[in-house]
Length: 543
Image (tube, rainbow, N blue to C red):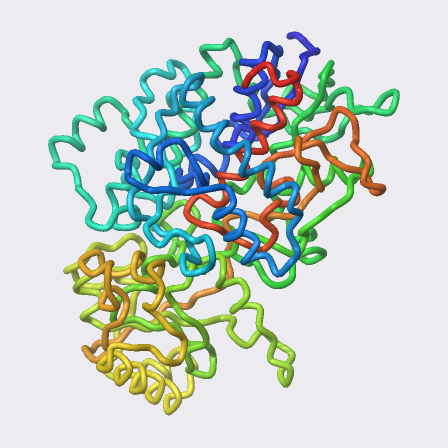
């Protein structure tokens, strides 16, 4: 086995795969290593959306955009904490990366029509969408022996759909027929994050780059003032591999490392929904060679809930559309609403981490999703549990709100008053308390039949039995780590480049800080900085 490459890439999510494709297309001999037995990382579990302003596919759906609009939008969310040079680098390289991957890696991206930015009413935001792109289905039979070596998501039950064929990805999704779904299954055609990983992996295999799995990176090799390799832990024992040009960290975040979460995060992240191999290995190695850290308090936050054992392999669920649809609200332990339930999932981190200065606890953790039989009949519930059926055995119904409150430990008078006020506001067609439904984003995630008006998210809670699901603080991943420059090179404590070391994806200090621009806001910067790393390592030859 060869123990020297031009470029070593650690991790096989979108960041690592993009870095590897870019470097390999630039003529580098690439060693691609993965900690787990299967490749794809959290990207393979994701919806596969990628947020790229000014992408070359916007014109096809009639959307105009500019880098200045996008810059204004991103900075409007930043509270003055983002590095302008990194945002400029992202906006400059993003469209180039899309063209490069479409041409050289067969990604075949297309813009997702209508999907709004997550804060579309901010200056430069796009209420009509266009900045989110996705790949079409990909036949995994083309991967040969790697067909069944990509990690499978526990969260999306039908992997033979694209995101745009679900209510989360289209105004009115065109759901394929049973015959078409059967055809896709027979050909193992997969969508969402599976399609993105499959296409990038196929490009690498065609370039002669085979991922090497069950290689846990433990230490960076430093000699003569630069990073020159990696020491791995493998089932066969320790292994040292050298890199003539550099090493790209793309190992994911630290959301499965309890010690790091306690040390760094601003508040609880008890329910990560990423691959469990994200334990901060890249962060550890970067710290050991003197990397400057940034954005360590932040994560890609998301509301989450426990599920009974056996529903999926993680025994948990993301609470996305469930909290935005009519006939539902969220309340805290005092039985009161505390935020706009239809706000983007990342923004919930701020709501969850509000401190009660009297109890010295988190005011809104845990919280409860409250809904009624009309909701269950129309939309089903998490699990997934389809609409129109009886509730799943694990979900208890209550004849009155008072009975629900008593059983789950909420003050009944407050909960009843909260629901009464909610119903009054719904009747008036407006939520004066938190503005739910006023943003195009709110309506998008609601009832698929009413995505263009407030009926998409406003509806009374008045049809017993009533239900409650406990909601806690989850995360798609963390977003703090070694700081980088505009070429994805890792910086030391004095702000100087650590020669030979690059970072991309959730292992790096996210250039987006606490913000989340739109659908694909995690994968967008991950891929762009992977592209920047691969391009710099090959002197721009890949572009």
